[in-house]
Length: 160
Image (cartoon, rainbow, N blue to C red; front, top):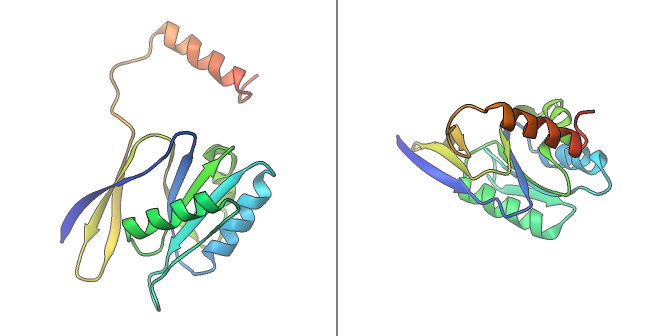
């Protein structure tokens, strides 16, 4: 077994959701979930098929994001893995719906931070061992940072 680190591109203004699912129907079901989440949400998604022709299946309502998702999934190369890129929306707006999809086994990451995927490669293929999402902590928040966090959440409409 060989362990590799695969950095996933996250262009400015985008978020990524990385997960695992188990069936070719994933692409169509995730498309329907994302398309129904918001009329403003732009997305591309891709799924690495793990049997049969083993193709990267992809779709989206934004051609650039669909291409980015398919290229990213191909470079990651882990079976039954899906990649979703979002613009004009955030993972928090779609995660519960994605997790409720019958094909979805679990979500590995949902972020706009730099993302590294730790991959194991065997003679059979590749699998995700884990992720490094962003950077490690630099300390504890103080009263000023707490106040800024609370203000930010209210300013963007997530708290009253």
